[in-house]
Length: 200
Ligand SMILES: [Zn+2]
Image 1 (cartoon, protein in one colour):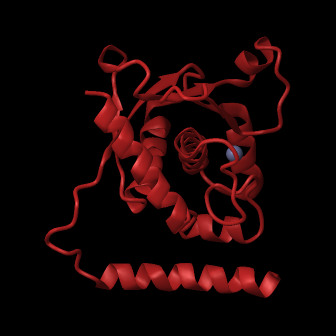
Image 2 (spheres, rainbow, N blue to C red):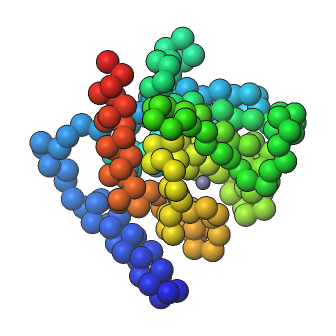
């Protein structure tokens, strides 16, 4: 089991090299665009939030999806996703005590939804594991948005959508290699294409 997991990591790293050396075909389909509104309730410093957005966008770009960050007045209700960053105080005010860094909330059969990142937990995890806050915030937003796009039961044994990041996930994170699996990336692209098609 352990050996199989290691092989998986090697294949993933090898895949990166191949991708880097391969010229994309001229007729490649353009990336579908995922539209996301960020609500910075935790008053995260703008420079940290900007770098976190770059991290989230990079992960989606690797899955073949462009992210457009929209302003509140541009939101198309029911079609655009929201990522809300909450502070610890705001989370406890909601009557929640949580050890998780984020949650995703969606309604069955209604596209869109809201991904929450809990900033105090993000900061704590980053400090404890030796990462920058912006990287972890970017990863948490990518993971929770991933739940909205992949639907119920979207935790996986490998990659970004693991329920908890530990061990070799942290190693992959250090090399910016914690991503969606290829099947998840395909499903994410499909959902984003569907959201785009139905929004007009
Ligand atoms: Zn999750």
